[in-house]
Image (cartoon, rainbow, N blue to C red; front, top):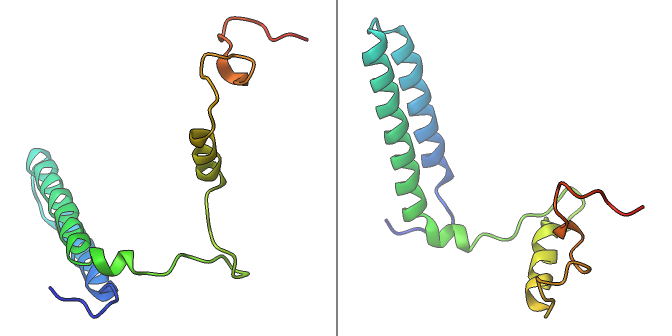
Length: 112
C-alpha cells in the first residue's frame, strides 16, 4: 500500500469497530464455554494480526509524523529516558556502590 505521507487512521478505527462488533456478536451467540473461549482467542489473534498489518503498511508514514506536543506546545518526553541515555554515556563504574544508591542489599539497614 502506498501512503500519501500520512497514516491511514480511518482504517485503524474501522479495524477497532469491526472487532468490537465481533465481540458484541460473540457474546450474543449461544456457544459452550469451551467454544466461547476458543472463539475469543481467535478474535484476539485476528485483531492483533490486523493491527500488525496496519502498522507494517503505515510504518513509514508513522515515522514521518511530527513529535507529540503537550497542551502548551512543549515536546512530550520521558525524563527517565534522557537520564538513562546520559548515564549510558558517562563512564561510571557499576561496581562502585557509593555512586549507585540502590546498590545496597535489601536485608541491610541504611546508615542513619
